[in-house]
Image: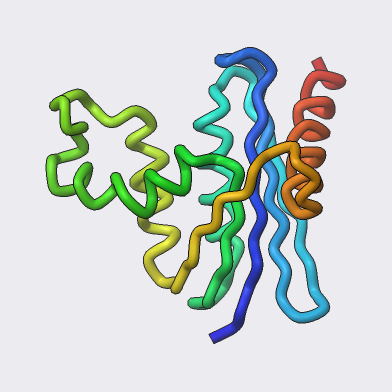
Length: 147
Protein backbone atom coordinates (compact mmCIF):
# COMPACT_ATOMS: atom_id res chain seq x y z
CA UNK A 1 0.00 0.00 0.00
CA UNK A 2 1.09 3.55 -0.74
CA UNK A 3 2.29 5.44 2.36
CA UNK A 4 0.74 8.93 2.63
CA UNK A 5 1.21 11.74 5.14
CA UNK A 6 -1.77 14.04 5.60
CA UNK A 7 -2.00 17.30 7.53
CA UNK A 8 -5.42 18.92 7.84
CA UNK A 9 -6.98 21.89 9.56
CA UNK A 10 -10.20 23.82 9.81
CA UNK A 11 -10.65 27.50 10.58
CA UNK A 12 -13.61 29.67 11.43
CA UNK A 13 -14.01 33.41 11.96
CA UNK A 14 -16.61 33.44 14.64
CA UNK A 15 -18.07 30.13 15.73
CA UNK A 16 -20.35 29.90 13.84
CA UNK A 17 -19.15 32.12 11.04
CA UNK A 18 -17.33 31.95 7.72
CA UNK A 19 -15.07 28.92 7.66
CA UNK A 20 -12.30 27.32 5.69
CA UNK A 21 -10.61 23.94 5.58
CA UNK A 22 -7.38 22.64 4.11
CA UNK A 23 -5.32 19.49 3.75
CA UNK A 24 -1.93 18.62 2.35
CA UNK A 25 -1.32 15.07 1.17
CA UNK A 26 2.26 13.93 0.63
CA UNK A 27 3.67 10.71 -0.79
CA UNK A 28 7.18 10.27 -2.10
CA UNK A 29 8.18 13.51 -3.82
CA UNK A 30 4.57 14.44 -4.58
CA UNK A 31 2.26 16.80 -2.68
CA UNK A 32 -1.33 17.80 -3.19
CA UNK A 33 -3.02 20.80 -1.54
CA UNK A 34 -6.77 20.89 -1.02
CA UNK A 35 -8.89 23.68 0.45
CA UNK A 36 -12.40 25.03 0.52
CA UNK A 37 -14.80 27.22 2.44
CA UNK A 38 -18.35 27.62 3.72
CA UNK A 39 -20.18 30.86 4.39
CA UNK A 40 -21.73 29.86 7.73
CA UNK A 41 -20.27 26.96 9.67
CA UNK A 42 -18.35 25.95 12.80
CA UNK A 43 -14.71 25.17 13.42
CA UNK A 44 -15.52 21.52 14.19
CA UNK A 45 -17.38 21.12 10.90
CA UNK A 46 -14.38 22.55 9.04
CA UNK A 47 -11.98 20.19 10.87
CA UNK A 48 -14.15 17.23 9.85
CA UNK A 49 -14.58 18.46 6.27
CA UNK A 50 -10.80 18.79 5.86
CA UNK A 51 -10.29 15.18 6.94
CA UNK A 52 -13.12 13.87 4.75
CA UNK A 53 -11.93 15.69 1.64
CA UNK A 54 -8.33 14.58 2.20
CA UNK A 55 -9.33 10.92 2.45
CA UNK A 56 -11.73 11.16 -0.50
CA UNK A 57 -8.87 12.47 -2.65
CA UNK A 58 -7.06 9.13 -2.37
CA UNK A 59 -7.76 6.81 -5.28
CA UNK A 60 -6.83 3.51 -3.59
CA UNK A 61 -6.36 2.16 -0.06
CA UNK A 62 -3.31 3.67 1.63
CA UNK A 63 -1.33 3.54 4.84
CA UNK A 64 -1.69 7.02 6.31
CA UNK A 65 -0.10 9.08 9.04
CA UNK A 66 -2.76 11.73 9.63
CA UNK A 67 -1.84 14.90 11.57
CA UNK A 68 -4.42 17.22 13.10
CA UNK A 69 -4.51 19.86 15.82
CA UNK A 70 -8.13 18.92 16.59
CA UNK A 71 -8.65 16.65 19.57
CA UNK A 72 -12.32 16.61 18.57
CA UNK A 73 -11.38 15.00 15.26
CA UNK A 74 -8.72 12.64 16.62
CA UNK A 75 -10.64 11.47 19.67
CA UNK A 76 -13.91 11.29 17.75
CA UNK A 77 -12.53 8.95 15.09
CA UNK A 78 -10.35 6.86 17.45
CA UNK A 79 -12.46 6.71 20.62
CA UNK A 80 -16.03 7.94 20.34
CA UNK A 81 -17.17 6.80 16.89
CA UNK A 82 -17.56 3.11 17.72
CA UNK A 83 -19.93 3.89 20.60
CA UNK A 84 -21.91 6.48 18.62
CA UNK A 85 -22.52 3.91 15.90
CA UNK A 86 -23.49 1.23 18.43
CA UNK A 87 -25.86 3.68 20.15
CA UNK A 88 -27.63 4.74 16.95
CA UNK A 89 -25.70 8.01 16.67
CA UNK A 90 -26.52 9.06 20.23
CA UNK A 91 -24.01 10.19 22.84
CA UNK A 92 -23.58 8.48 26.20
CA UNK A 93 -26.09 11.06 27.50
CA UNK A 94 -28.56 9.82 24.82
CA UNK A 95 -28.36 13.09 22.90
CA UNK A 96 -27.94 13.19 19.11
CA UNK A 97 -24.28 13.30 18.05
CA UNK A 98 -23.36 16.76 16.77
CA UNK A 99 -22.19 16.75 13.16
CA UNK A 100 -23.35 13.15 12.70
CA UNK A 101 -23.59 13.69 8.93
CA UNK A 102 -19.89 14.49 8.76
CA UNK A 103 -18.89 11.74 11.20
CA UNK A 104 -20.70 9.22 8.99
CA UNK A 105 -18.95 10.58 5.90
CA UNK A 106 -15.57 10.46 7.66
CA UNK A 107 -16.18 6.88 8.80
CA UNK A 108 -16.92 5.89 5.20
CA UNK A 109 -13.94 7.79 3.78
CA UNK A 110 -11.55 6.28 6.34
CA UNK A 111 -12.76 2.68 5.96
CA UNK A 112 -10.48 1.51 3.10
CA UNK A 113 -7.32 2.90 4.71
CA UNK A 114 -4.93 2.01 7.52
CA UNK A 115 -4.70 5.29 9.44
CA UNK A 116 -2.57 6.34 12.39
CA UNK A 117 -4.08 9.52 13.82
CA UNK A 118 -1.64 12.00 15.38
CA UNK A 119 -2.46 15.11 17.39
CA UNK A 120 -0.15 18.13 17.13
CA UNK A 121 -0.41 21.32 19.15
CA UNK A 122 -1.82 24.07 16.97
CA UNK A 123 0.07 27.33 16.42
CA UNK A 124 3.24 25.82 17.90
CA UNK A 125 5.55 25.94 14.90
CA UNK A 126 4.77 22.46 13.50
CA UNK A 127 5.46 23.11 9.79
CA UNK A 128 2.69 20.91 8.37
CA UNK A 129 0.10 22.27 10.76
CA UNK A 130 1.12 25.88 10.16
CA UNK A 131 0.82 25.32 6.42
CA UNK A 132 -2.71 23.91 6.52
CA UNK A 133 -3.79 26.60 8.98
CA UNK A 134 -2.58 29.23 6.50
CA UNK A 135 -4.34 27.49 3.60
CA UNK A 136 -7.62 27.23 5.54
CA UNK A 137 -7.50 30.93 6.39
CA UNK A 138 -6.65 31.82 2.80
CA UNK A 139 -9.77 29.88 1.72
CA UNK A 140 -11.84 32.11 4.03
CA UNK A 141 -10.13 35.20 2.62
CA UNK A 142 -10.94 34.13 -0.97
CA UNK A 143 -14.58 33.61 -0.07
CA UNK A 144 -14.89 36.94 1.73
CA UNK A 145 -13.18 38.78 -1.14
CA UNK A 146 -15.91 37.52 -3.51
CA UNK A 147 -18.75 38.85 -1.36
